[in-house]
Length: 287
Length: 342
Image 1 (cartoon, rainbow over the protein chains, first blue to last red):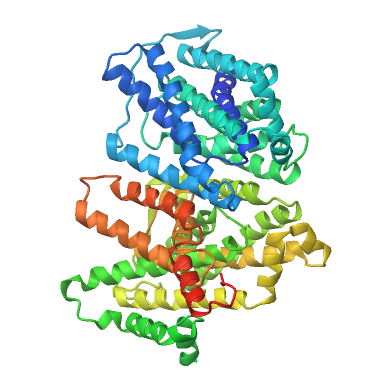
Image 2: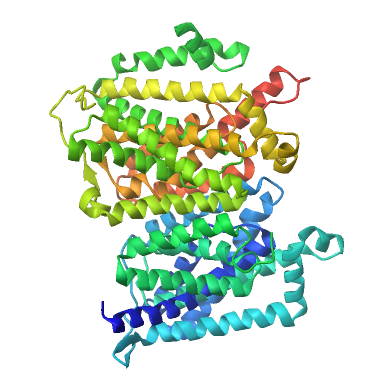
């Protein structure tokens, strides 16, 4: 095996890990605050990709503007998911919330198939390929990585430096105590769902410049994102980052050494084993 | 014995026994009913409903106690592929291969279940661990493409018409009765669990695991028992399905897609009742078939769009499922003084 190939895969793994971290953090935020894993989260990403695609190809918007629109649009979708589906059953069995988002997954996938068929659609951007020490790196991936890191930093500053962010972290630590102390948890939930959605939209905008979109795009990496989110641990941003880069390296380097499928198998087995040993997450304080 | 079957097929409600008996009699006579040219098609759809209803019932054995598995596709795929590969490559009769598949699925459930229950992996965490298992099995089937045909699928080797040893029957009626028998057996297992200590123990665990353990309920053992039964039955369903359709595909038999479909059919009908998963499966398959026949491929995705929407609405407004809600209403009307049963 050529060491340059493996190095290239490792670098690509880091770049992929940036976008995965963005998704895992968005999902982790919702999971931490509302205590629900949105199984349909990656379908929101898929809608964000379509939003950019259509705004650029049908309406001639510049890509960056379409990307910003996707962030806003999917942010609103996140709010709607919470208001229409999660809020009415917050008091019900936790499993029902999980299943309701699963129903939404079906709905969004099939509705996208109905509207836009299963064609693979690509923006066909001619972004340059950089050559660094024998490795070929795509500029689109570097861009996606940089923007992801910026967004993750922004989220970190929001959660630690603002009043609302601090309140959101408090809710994720103890939902009931915060409600007793007079905090309006409903607003926190909404803000969280909106931010989570917006991060999904941003991820969509960053993915459409690298891949072509189709209704089942989300399904291809959805399970991985849930697992990274849980593996990182509730409300632990460092944990989510570590888990993202761990999993993306396993997939990227493992994919070169064996096959993509086997790399995913290894990643999922690591997840299952980690749940047995550290169910609270890699770096979390405990459940 | 037939009377006992007739009796419990009618459900617990006193007045509904004749209705249940009538339904069973209709099911038994179905292949001879004058359905005209639609006969073969009706039997085909009925076989699909019975097989998937059996699998849904097997899933609900766990689901009703809060052990929500999103990875039953793992057991289904393992079952179907084990018996098919054994037959295709070594000519092992599916009767034996099926037994191997069922044992294999139970072992897989043990390997996953024991550490899960021992280390208290519950709720969302359990759901995601099982989801990962379902994906692992699907990806392994795809990765071992030299054996399994990968994502293109694999066709069961034809034994040439009617062969008992190969469990291949040109006649759909044989499969119909096999599916009917397996489905009834699944209901019998459900009923048996419902009337056993296992049910009380699991309900106690579901309400408060620590408290149940404190009063001496062996939590791990009871959870493991129900998981093994559920996995073994699901694998059996996979074997039967494989023998009937004679074509296996990792996308339709393993992984997150089929796992969610199993769960959703049970949820639509109501996972807390004997016939809930069956009703849910019948409705979802009937809806999918109706939309397919009515719209063809013109409206690709429309059937699942409606299905997904119906699912969300049912989970929000009828969390006990369609059949579960109807039953609770009937029970309340019949005995206003008594507490409404599940």
